[in-house]
Image (tube, rainbow over all chains, first blue to last red; front, side, top):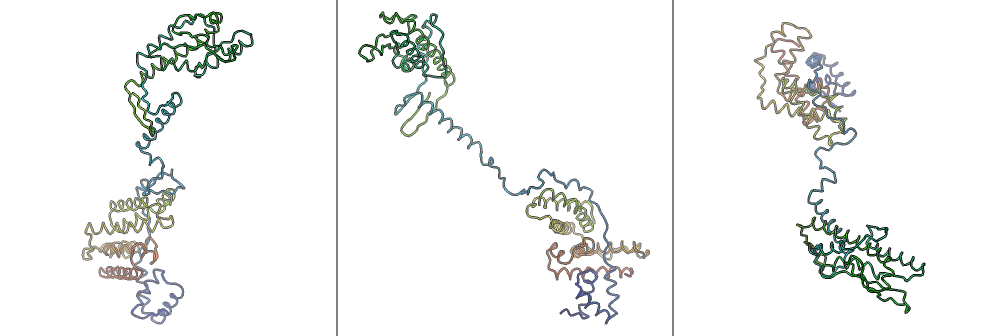
Amino acid sequence: MMVIDKENIEMYLMMLSDGELDEREIKVVMDFLNNHPEYQEMLDDFQKVKLSTESILFPEIELLYKEKIETNVIVKPDSPKQNVFAYLNWKTISSAAAILLMAIFTTVLFVNNDMPDEVEATIASEQSNKSLQNVAEQTDDSHLPMLEHNKHKSESVVVLQQTKRKSLIAANDAPIAINKPQNVERNLVVEGRNEQPTIAIENPFNDNGSSSVVAVQDVTLNKPTVDNTYAKENRLEQYPLVKEASEHLKEKVEIAKNIVSELNNTSIQFAFGNKRIKIK
Amino acid sequence: MTAGEYNECVKQHADDVYRFAWKSLRSEEDARDVVQHAFEILWRNLHQVSSDKCKSYLFTIAHRKCIDFYRTNKVTADIDKLDFNNYVQNHDHSGLKKALETALNQLPLEQKNLVLLKDVEGYNYEEIAQITELSLSQVKVYLFRARKQLQKILEVYQYKV
């Protein structure tokens, strides 16, 4: 219960003039004023010293506005950025790129080459390049018929050989096949450094039913000098195959030269388990 | 609070904060600094302030800043230096208003700000206590002292209120 006396009446009068009393308190104060009219003047004094409101405009209000591009988005200026790219610095990106490059390079090496336990892959030397280039240049292509050549398939010789054999069988001619032609290409590239590449020509449909080598042709000659009548009769069938091999050799030589020029001053060494690969 | 709500807060309350600071410090330049400071703090802490609390938040910062300015500039009230001659001679409403403003400027800044927050800005006692970080009883006591001081100042200079 609110008690008003002469000690606290001034405080209640100020609160009454400030509108801080509820209805019950106002009633109590008014009852006190009715009983003590001498305090009415004190209430008037409090009401007269109240300040009035006036309008003052801030002249630089335009400076306070912010751009509304973030409207309806809670702005957290002091919070750390939630951008995931903020955690990707140049070290992370370069590491990822290096790992990816190594994985691709290793995959290419394992697919295209037989990987020994310890490989020291050296780009073909200038001498071997010249040797291979000579092989390709010395091949006589003037008498070769047009061939469909798939530059992107390393097994193109095989496809050609199989197609040709089928046509020969249909014509009841002596079938000719090149035994493992894919090895011909590889031997020319890998072993061409020390010995002349050869193509073994065999007749897989001899009387015994087993394959046998019927001719060995040196592809470095301008024209095949096969001392075999069987090979001479089927020379036209050999030319497309030799043509194919020579075209392929040319492409390989060009690729090898490009690789050498690109990686001439590059040396990379890395290891996977017990396999160590060194590229100069 | 969003940026849009912040801009709305600027639109609605910038003039009020400026008026409060200007009447408190009696310096247009200082009042501009107070307003700039208050809204800068609000922008920094935008995520901590809801839109319905932005006005009291701004006045809290402005009140603190005014106190800092007051203490830094060593502004002191000196009743004896008041010149009420012009106001005493014109006992009309405009004269009373100017006399009250002059008397108000002679109050200690803490009491002065309480009167401004109550009479000019229209806050109740509880809101003033929140803004000034005082207790409710302190607000009542300080306001009472300020009212009595204003009455005393006007009576001393024969301006019978």
